[in-house]
Image (cartoon, rainbow, N blue to C red):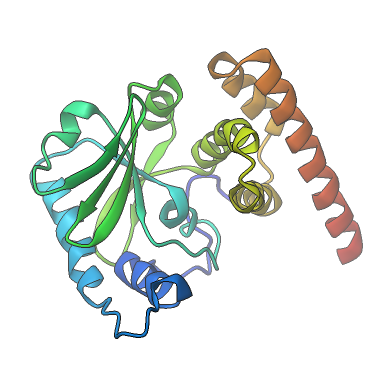
Length: 224
């Protein structure tokens, strides 16, 4: 199976519907009143139209990008890699948080998270690990399997330090699923990631990879 193209039997992803369903079925949004989510369909379509019309140089990552390779992933937001300069091309976006490497904004009720290219790894993935994928709304530059694994592995050490058990489980499952279906060379990926992490973080990431490889091996033996 190619590490760039979508799964051969996977349907074209309708980004708006994925996000609408995720938001609608999140009980945290239920507060005894009718919670309207249909506007998210238009918000998603409009956002990608604006990105195209203004020639914003970006790459789709996160849960939506993962859905082009594996099915069943759930997400309420859109994750994009872009530069601070490109972010300024979206004045309609209400920025709710921003630091050196990340920003979060609201576009007509749609949450959009930005991984800024001031971070060397984010810039690296955007430059070297992006292909065009077809979505229901339009064709979108999207991270490859290798790019997504690099980003997920890079994110794990800080999440471990934060003690965010839910996100750790989610990210490790994303990595394991991509490893299972696409069998990437994880040593090559670890070597590629090494310049962007500390030696301590590299050791932790290496342990995660080894653990996931053992889990996958057990599963494959069970399928024999």
